Amino acid sequence: MKRVLTYAFLALTGFFVVAAFAPVQAGSFLTPAIFVVDGGRVEQFTNAGVFVNQFAINGSGRFPNGAAGMAIDVNGNFFLTDIGNKNVSEFNSNGIFVRTFGSYGSGNGQFLNGIGGIAVGVAGNVFVVDAGNHRVQEFSNTGTYLSKFGTFGSGPGQFQNPGAIVVNVNNVTLTPTSVTTDDAASGEIWVADGGRVEQFTNAGVFVNQFAINGGGRFPNGAAGMAIDAGGAFFLTDIANKDVSVFSSGGAFLRSFGSYGSSNGQFLNGIGGIAIGRVSGDVWVSDAGNYRVQKFFDNGTFLQAVGTFGSGPGQFQAPGAIAIRGNVTACSTTLPINFCDDVQ
Image (tube, rainbow, N blue to C red; front, side):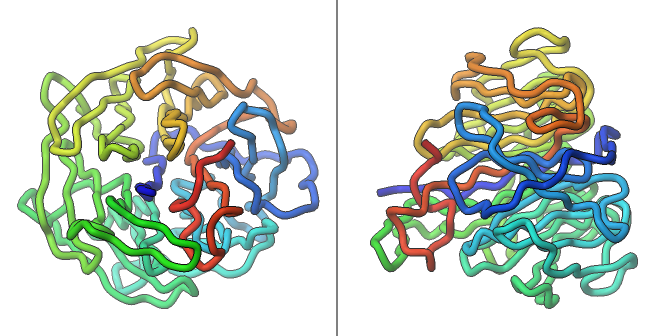
């Protein structure tokens, strides 16, 4: 069984609203689901777009400007990047606040303006984009600073405006108790930086890059990025209000979406993107229209979920999206997104 681990995250697009939301429902968030950050909460939906549950993230001064990125670890814990406080907050699988790590600055473990994309690696370590310091930082799953990579510049391994980040595990073989790989690139890290995407090893060593800004694409960079089971890259274009698809080798394949409010269109605030591992369905945040949209991987529109409001299943500022797979067929010691897709 082959799987690709992907995470997708929203860059700063100006669509962050924090409001008083409906009460949080009690219960675990371990079931297979689509999770969407909306201002001061995270909402849970089935793959059919039906609202299931929600939990608040904005207590005690957290997330005054919303969350830029979200990732889920092996135990179902949520890690979210806080734009206003320049740190990362962790919530457990029941939606309960666990800890915060990081602060404002340029030292190790600190962030300037532009904290954004976040991803969980194969070993459970957390990678966070620190655009203001032109780098990516690595932390343990308890928030201990481990390492960093990147400096300012446009050369290989450098950054000018890093945003979305994906940890990609290709050619992963699952057994009930272990994960093995037969691909030297397994655990690779991909970072969107302006008009290009850079590839790094899981130790932060630069490997390769490809351009995404040909043909007028991505004049303001990419807001979100995801990788499908075939290794194709899907990136949300802030300026053009569409999604561009590139092959596993970085060749442009197609774009879908346009400016507007009809099905398959986006207003200002196109951002988070995530892909179902088995279904291949592509979920995209459309903050300007207060919804998330689902597409086939060929760009065919399938469904719109959400309306304006603060009630269950509604949105005021939908942003980052993460998909949690079905772990019933997998050992709970394995990374969640290696397992079966949501049903």
